[in-house]
Image 1 (cartoon, rainbow, N blue to C red):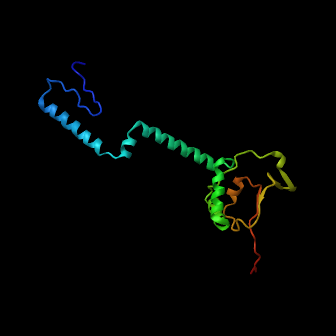
Image 2: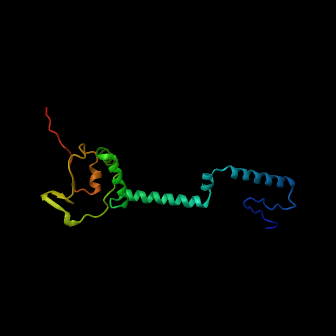
Image 3: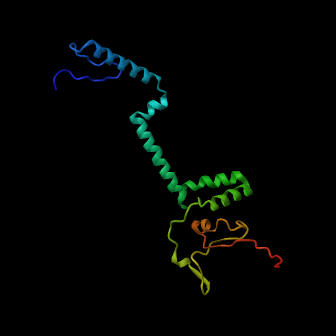
Length: 168
């Protein structure tokens, strides 16, 4: 390339060749002035978005989101101690309602660990429990979140209480 190259430095005007026509010099100066005004009017969030730090921050937030979604989906995650504190603050009935709503929406964590084959029980032929730990009746009287409770790792789930009624 022949001639000097135009370089843009923060806060400085580019080196304009002396043999450049006056109207082009005026256009370049006008452009640089408008760009400086636009940069000055940007708020901190816009400046952060267009910076390298903003990109790294965005990648970090995305990674944190992925980690949290992984932790919420795994029963053995250390993040679930937070839920214990939240349930204690809600009280028994509030915690039960939140648990049942979460089970209905299938957002409870899943037991991803393989069950121990020594825990398999078959009390009657054709009735097999993969773990001897079950959910007693009374928690989910409507049976709305059965699949979610099995995903939690329960071997059996009792739905009820079932009230007898008149059959017409």
